[in-house]
Amino acid sequence: MTTNEKNETDKKNENHTSYSSHPSHPSHNSHSSHSPNPTPSIIPPRGDYQTLLSFQKAEIVYDLTFRFTQKFLQKGDRTVDQMVQAARSGKKNILEGSKAGRTSKETEIKLTNVARASLEELLDDYKDYLRTRDFPLWDKDSEQAQYIRTMSRKNPQSYEDYREFVETRPPETIANIALCLIHQTNYLIDQQLRRLEQDFLSQGGLRERLTQARLQSRKPPKP
Image (tube, rainbow, N blue to C red; front, side, top):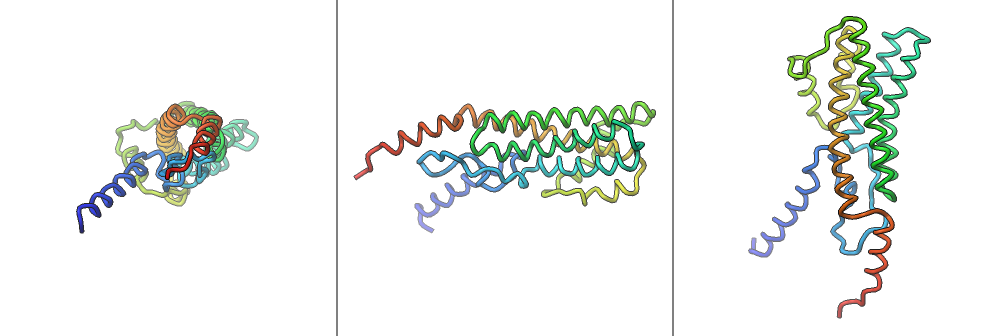
């Protein structure tokens, strides 16, 4: 391999690493708003929400919460609808925000914040369930919590990874598992929000991209 070829290979490897270094956005390169094309992209190729680990986690939380409330809470209890709706909002707002991010980073940030707030509400509902029934709340460094964190390293993830626990463990165990998963999801969303804010500050929104694209199109071609 020549020196020039080696330099080109190293450069490609560095570019690939820059896309995979964000755990909250473990998606392929098209999800990033960055582009190697010098011409500014007016509508970046975003919206593949299913590759976001935050969305995968939020979907697990929704599936678990739906089953938990149907199995362990009484029919007619308003808490059932509140918990299911909070879990659904967490998932759907990540989805909608990712799609909206193609034309509006402001909207993406806003909707992602709504997802974060909804999951925080759900977190408190699970804590209420444990406290009012005198069930123990796992310490974050307990053996049980560490085991759930170990399971969370799998990527991608789905509800099937936790189905056996939900179907065989008592309600206090399932509620604690839900708390662990919500904490993980919230952490990922926080990381995601920080990156979205950085992208907005460095690249602006649709209006800025339109201006950049117009200016770029007016430049005379290089001889």
